[in-house]
Image 1 (spheres, rainbow, N blue to C red):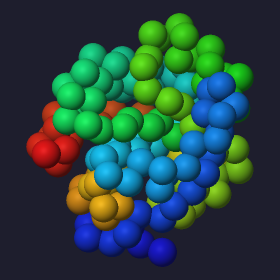
Image 2: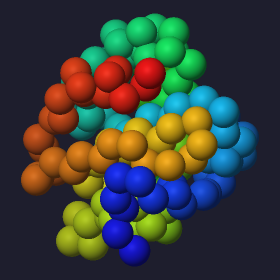
Image 3: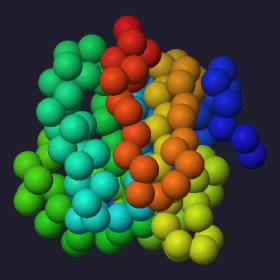
Length: 148
């Protein structure tokens, strides 16, 4: 399945850092930013999530829900979230089922690649970008424009 602008975002339920179920479709009525990434605590992922932390207020002021998704366990997510003082949920996609749905799983690395998907309040994909390599940090500066 290809993830393209205009299509319905595939629904999923994953557990967050507190072991709570989070279902994508429960956020209908507000925009959602899905941030797929390889590993908590790696330098590029730390940099990226700190940038998200710093932009978080401007995104949530537009009503957005921000969700990080990687194959790390909720234990690792909890420690990473606390250490970096992150406000957004980090969802555990152990095994990569959701990452595969969103065409971001890397079988060689056994991890998600970097992909950002912005979903509008109706559940449609309005923006998607994927970096070419695992260590390459994404530029999130354009995301805010898709949250209006």
